[in-house]
Length: 175
Image (cartoon, rainbow, N blue to C red; front, side):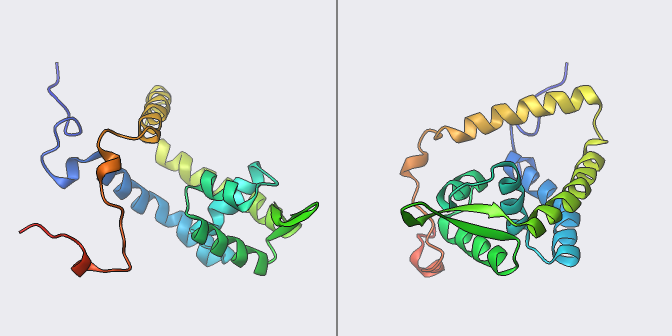
């Protein structure tokens, strides 16, 4: 019987779950980024917004930010850029123009329908390293990990929030 995994007893950076997932995303996601930026003229963040709206037409910006796991400022910037590129439109709500719903334009829908199969092929290429049973187990495990991450981990609320604008001098550096 095998002993504990590197994940359960991490001894180095390369053993940490989130670091390994981040490395996978960086390497496995780079063809998607190149495709988005080089062929379609959109950023990965804009692709995320387009893909989410293709499945959830009519979201408000705040709902989109929550679904995309982006802060409102980054979501607003992506939406503004996509509106300027004529891939997205803001549809004002009746009675309150601030409650605009977001919708893909015909051009945005066409981009999604052309790009999604290409992204899907890259996804399938990555998953080809796994058997169908392994892929199914990974899917279940990812759901479990996401559920765990969605619940505040013990002690997380006591951690200070990042303030990247203040720089290293404002941080408390040990030693």
